[in-house]
Image 1 (cartoon, rainbow, N blue to C red):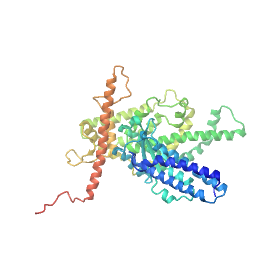
Image 2: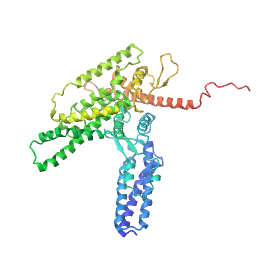
Image 3: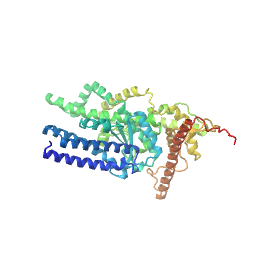
Image 4: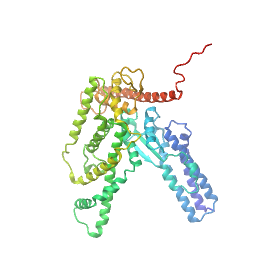
Length: 492
């Protein structure tokens, strides 16, 4: 039987489990507006809590040695800590994003990457988009063996992708393009690209030893050298892997959404930062590649979208194609210019990162991913949708020629790219709310820009939702097999 002390511990654990379950219960009951991912997480959290409560009851009446009982209580305490981390999704209504149809393509995209995954979409007052949770794996490793996994984890996704949309951007559909980079982190994990630095870094060991000696300034004694170099290698291996992961996530983002990710990253990332980070930038220098390197890699990734033949129907469109290509070429030339005060001390680190990226691109570039946005679709659909925006018509469908009477739903990536092209090329009024340097501009002008961007955002959001509704309608209509297309008249 359990001792008095262990009984007290078990009762305390049961109280904590009850608290966790009470926070998840309203979401599992669907009485609050929550994304489907949060509802699913709540259902499974309650299942785990119920299983733990049952097991705690078994502990109270079972026969265990003191050592075995301590071990079981420790396992349950660890499981509770894991569950407690996920209660942040149930702590406040403020962090919920209403489930709009315009966000459903991102959920479908994640499932096309891994069917055993789900998405949680929430907002917060921070410029952070992504977190990657493997709750099932963590709990399966720590739960007591006597807990029935078949029931607890029935339908429980292996991966939860949490998309944190900053509150200030939650209504801005244009910056949804940045979600492609965050989903790129998930693809990086699914493709197991973290194995590449593990193979590349040892190949540079001799040169890293020289780099270490140069950075240290003095030669350590032989006894201390191995330990110091091991710590040095561990630190810089993390730096290499972090920079490489960000670059590959950018590349996957371009594969998912096309060229508009380049413009979204420029608008979102650059204000307040230099093109090239320096050691004085601290964590940003260590963990992130420079914007110069990120933009150059993105220019390479979007080349298949912009170098093919566009379907253009007007002279204005042809001029716009030339203008877009000229802009990208000019930008590429500017980015390839060396930084004004280049710091080549860390050139070896950058070289290793480049080697990792090269090997990863060799692995993934030719892959036929089901989630990849077809560059031919971009060139076929972009300007027809762009023209519809110019005519103040929702860009939610494509017609095969101007005379075509029936349209087909436009791809959501094409709608976003057309919206970005319009945003960048808008001639009659400025949408840029935050970055303006004309001292003559008044607060009323800025408010007018803000309202214009809100109207445009609503227009694009409705267009994406219309394309989704259109696609679903055609799919449902096909199920009728034409029965109602030409009704036969029946004599009375």
